[in-house]
Length: 146
Image (cartoon, rainbow, N blue to C red):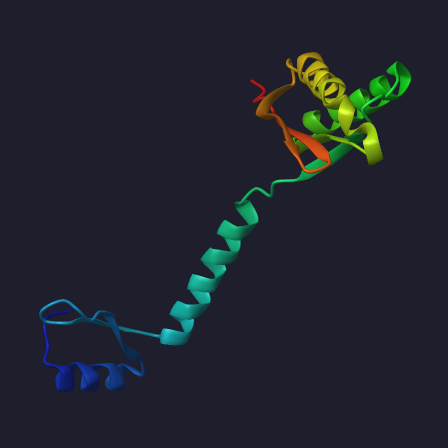
């Protein structure tokens, strides 16, 4: 092509039945391109759609314990947690303290740390147990498999 004054560039675009699109208006002189603008927009939307489809979606699964969860329930919930981590989901494990059971904070923390230790081969702790109101929460994320 070449460098043309704006009026000549507009004529050139009109002759070809295309649009004159300003690419970078802040440049000296401003840069413009002759193209089919609707086709350009269509291609751009198509590229964005492909990128969006390739983006991974983070799924967070929750597992709830009580401060005095017995061994059978713990094992059952641990198996579910393993399944969630193997499927690639993040895990939010929390102990919910009802009423006066908040006095068993240490039991809740021990329970969550035990879970983290049991799942350390397939998941890593993202956030250590932390008390927020009546909940003690811990986050685990799946380990990268080779």
